[in-house]
Each structure stands twice: as structure tokens, then as C-alpha cells.
Image 1: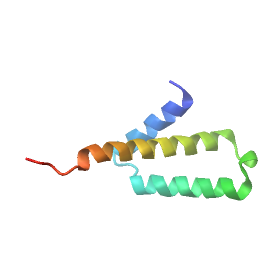
Image 2 (image 1 turned 90 degrees about the vertical axis):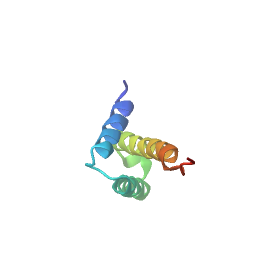
Image 3 (image 1 turned 30 degrees about the vertical axis):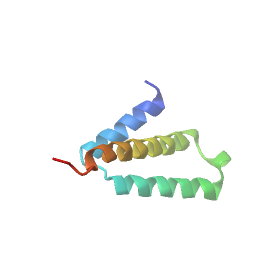
Image 4 (image 1 turned 135 degrees about the vertical axis):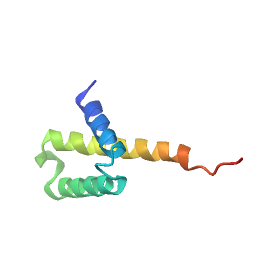
Length: 75
């Protein structure tokens, strides 16, 4: 498992346990991206970029799974 995959798994686990909400995760990602834009990508540590990419991936995975479970049930 790569470092990125490990970060994604940790983020997904924290959301599943209720330690972090999807809304908070999106805010953290937006704040991180704003910071990167402000200082420039070349002036940001690799670990921050990796964490932001992991957050983005986790958000997309959560939203993709949500579609499966939020469908109207046709009984």
C-alpha cells in the first residue's frame, strides 16, 4: 500500500467513525487548495500536496458510494 492509499484509507475511516464529516473534509480541501494557490505549488511541501490529493480522492469515493445508497427505493 502506498503512502497515498494509506492516507485515503485513514480519511475514509475517520469519516466512517464519525470523527470527520464530509462537509469538514471539503472545507479542509478548499482551505488547502487556497493556500497552495496563494504561496505557489513550488513553495509547498510534498506531504501537503499528497494529503490534499488523498482528501480529494476520499471525497470522490464517498460521493460515488453515496449515490448507490441514496437512490429512491422502488418496492
